[in-house]
Image 1 (spheres, rainbow, N blue to C red):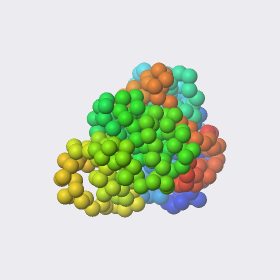
Image 2 (cartoon, rainbow, N blue to C red):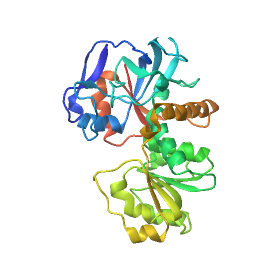
Image 3 (tube, helix red, strand yellow):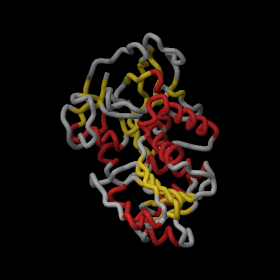
Length: 324
């Protein structure tokens, strides 16, 4: 089969499209014929070794995918050949999803929502699991609260806007262009803030009549924490789902204490395989109801994974997806 692998760590140039042996499922495993694989920031972190993993090169990268079950191993129940599924959580302790076939644990196989493409299903995985885990599990967002979604045009951001809207929260969202603002508003944002035009903190205060927001979903904690503390309401929660460019951050303690701030961190991997599959099963249900929808911005052939990673590092809207 064809796969995209790394033999050393580095930039997009280390991605190699090559032939590898097609795996066979062992006990408790499912072999999926991959029809689409989403590109995620964690794939870049694995590629560059900024997120060290147990499995060393050479290895296939990629966390998310969707496809058709080709075969199942011993002791597998509830999943059968021919089932259409999607999944997340590969590429860390296992081979990844940038391949024509992928091995997953049976518990990771979530039925693909009816009425959407494999590309759209692949785009659900890590993005919606992360947004759900941050907003629902960690922040405990409830109806009537106001949430600020940072980087709303990206995969996690566009998912978070929809989830917050679905939970009847007021949604403020930062974007980088007027075009992105229009798209994000279609996803359910009540107000968009173009960070290239206005000061985000000033605009948040204006839109909330000085009160601030109840929850901030933050992708770049090390760069934005101080500003975030100036934008939350009393008792507000900042949920960090991405560290940002620096490995550490200084907390303005006086400012944080003054507003009873809660600084939370969130990684959906802590839900475990079964917990993540449970979240994605609920996401799939809401997709079938029309409450949520995956946002695919660009589709590349698997052989052009380098170009997909280059685009991920720049301006883009929604998820980038690879198709074998």
